[in-house]
Image (tube, rainbow, N blue to C red):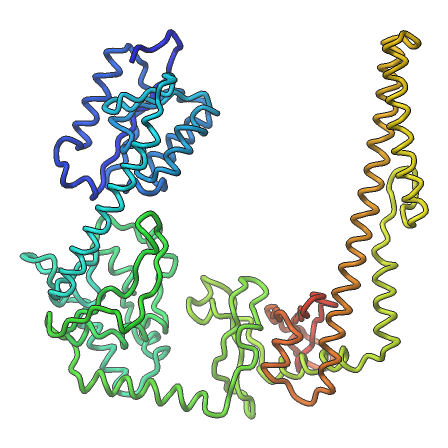
Length: 546
């Protein structure tokens, strides 16, 4: 592969992952580095930089060094890439092909894979796509073998995850066996002890925080020097969800439950939850931190609390009421207000506190009455009032042209515009012919053509605005007609039901309440926006809650 006289700014790209473990030294980073540097020196190439992805799979391209190299290509700092072979670039033949066949040529980047004798400047490179397919087949086969090996180890009760669960650490003499962590195991035992006494998860959270106990995520980063707490997790505090997860985990009974999730395929990072019946559970694999009696009692308390809380209350706004700021679903929570059934609170705030969002508290009954009142307004509209609304929409969305104050609002005017467009086409054709036979000069022809084409552009713009306006009117009219059809299916509204809400309402946004002083005293003001099906929100209402 002789290199042309083009001055190249060269990127040496190296990659190694677990899938290459069986190749040993032949593909090690050090071996790749020596090969690429020797090739560059032999061909008098200027090395701009070396890009190393050590421990990254070739089946996806979310690799830090690779992304940095692409950025340097975008910034025109690199115009030649060299790898040991095509598989170092990637093992996903579709994406690899997109880079070698499309991206690199479009960015004037030459690509060389030494061991595959591949050079993008060489027109005889038909073997490359087949190489990419073979590389992907290798990756798929390797993935299957790894998955089979992992499953066999799981069935043997060997713990194979990267990190031990909170409360445990990996044994020094056997990384597949769990042993109690001297610090975290005590915390886990305390959590179960508090839960056995009847404390709720939120009470346990407060107790742990008052004693400055690090959350599992923060503790993990503390004992693992490779983890940075700021980048590893957004949520550094204890949460009720964390406590509940610990209390439900059978690992603390001394059992190993693995295979709870799996990747969609070997190329993807996306994981899906595995049905519990398919988990691989092996009992008595390590020292328990809690006895079966305590574990069962805690589970019973949890079920009893849930039943007690939900026996006479059902949140009909579940999935519909959302925080106006972060978009999370509003979640039901307890209330101290006499006679009230519950509060709704931002789900993000409930889980993670003020670092995720503000509370957006709203009394359940207050929201119920607001929505009931607003729905009654829509349902009680007379036929004439509904027709008036549709007429107003049609009038409201008439679009006025901003050019020459000309109103594009009638079919008659649209017809005139279309006629003029046809006329201009004929005129342009005629002046072409006149220019060809010498009746008008080239200079005169160019000026006339420019004027007529500018007029056509202006007319086309007006026609487009008219058509957009017309479509918007039709869509809005249709939306309201469809909404009113839904409303007509509801004879009257005396109470709200989940079916009624899902039929008429898309979502309800709850704003953060603020307290203001008035002559009547201190009141809470809160914005509630109802988005109806088909038509969206009619108005944004700010309610005063006394």
